Image (cartoon, rainbow, N blue to C red; front, side):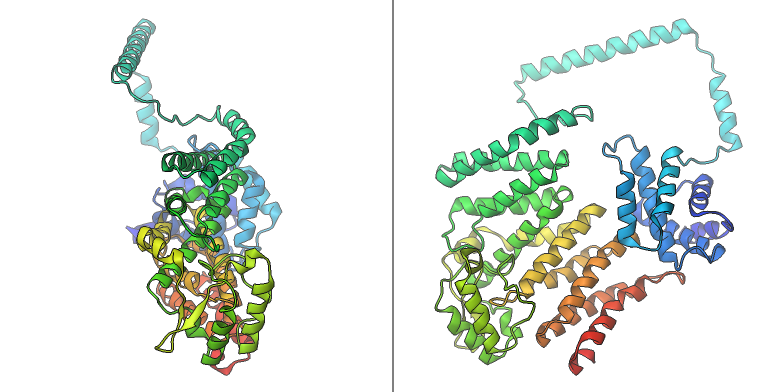
Length: 529
C-alpha cells in the first residue's frame, strides 16, 4: 500500500509550480489519509518529488517536507469546526521559522493567506456528479417536509423532558459542563478576575490547617483551576497554580515533610500525567519534582550518588568534608541551586569553592545542597535524610516513570514544551556543583525511545532543542560528564540512523552535527576519539 502511494505521487508532475500551487494540486487529486504516520509518508514523498521537479526551490527535501506538513496542520486548524482557537499568521510564521530559516516571511505570509482564502478539496469526479443529480431528482413536496419537521421537533422535545425528569428522580448530582465557544470569553474574564483570590484562599488553608478533609478539598480546587486555566488557554494563571502546588511539596527544602505535602506531590505528578498537553512552561516544575523525588528514593535505599561516577576520590572527600559543616537538604538535583559559574567540579579546590558559595548564599541556594558521605565500601552515597523514607514509602517510583512513558501521548506542541523543560532541568542538574546529576540526561534517551513513532516534522523541532543541549554538556569541563553525554548521544544516534530516509533529505546528517561540534571544541584527545 505504501509503495502504491509512492508510485502515485511520483507519477504527478509539479514542474514549474509554486509550492502552494503544487500542494493544492496534490490535495485535489486524492484524499490524504488521516493517520499521522500515513500523512508523514505521503508528504515525505511529495517533498522529494517536488524538489526533483524544481531543483532551484529548496536546498533539500527537509525544507519542502516541513513546509508541506505546516500547510497540512494550518489547513486542518482553519477548516476544522471543532478547533476553537485558530492559528494566527504570526504563529504560522513562528512555527516554520523555528524549524527552518530557509523560507522567507513573505513566502510564508502568501501561503497562509492562500490557505485561508480557499479550502483545499478533491476535484469532483463524473460519477459523483451523476450521483448528486440522481439524489436531487427525488421529489419531496413542501407539505411532506413540514410534517417531517414537526414530527422530529416533537420527538426531540419529548426526549429532553424525559431525560430531565429521570435526572431529578434519580437525584443526579450537578456535573461540570464544558462551555461552548461563545462562553469561553466570559469564563476567561471571570476566572482571570477571581483566580488569584481563590489561589490565596487555598494556600492559606493548606498552610495553616491540619484537617485532611479541608486540605483534600483545596487540592481538588487546585486541580479544577489548573484544568480550567488549561481549557481557557490562560498560561500565566496555569503556571501560578502549578508553581504554588510545587511549593507545597517542600521538595528541595530543609523542612520536614508531612502527609499533606505527600498529597501535593501525588497531585502534581497526576496533573503531569493527565493534563500534559496544556502545561507548557509549567512542565519544568513537574520534572523538577520527579528529579527530587528520585534523589529521596536514592537516599532511602542508600544508593550511590551520581557524583560517585563523575569525581575522583580526592574530590569526593573534599565535597563530603565541606558539606558536613552545613545543613542537609531533602533534594538538590534541579532548580536554581547550582552555582552561576559555567565550569564543573574538576578538582577539590573547585568543590570547596562551590560549597562555600552554596553555603554562604541565600536559603534558596542552601536548601538544594545534599550532604554526601563515603561509605565503608569507599563509594560516595547520599547521606540519611528524615524525609527520604516517608517519600519512599508513599510515592511509588512508577508514578514518576509514568510522566516519561506518557510523553508518547502528548500532542506535537506539548512534547516540544516537555523537551524544553527537560533540557533546562538537565542543565541545572549537571551544572549544580554541590550535587551534579544525570537523571534528566538519561531520561532524554528514554523519551526518545518512547517517541520514535513521531513524524519527522515533530522530530526536527525536538532535535533543535536536544542537539544544543548535548553540544553544551558534551563540551563540559569535567571529562567524565562529557563521556556520559556522548554515550547518551550515541544511543540516540543508533535509534535514528536505523530509520529509512529518502535521498533528498538531510535530517540524519543534521543529527550527527553535535558530534562534529563536540570534536571541534573539545581539547581532550579521549573525547575526540
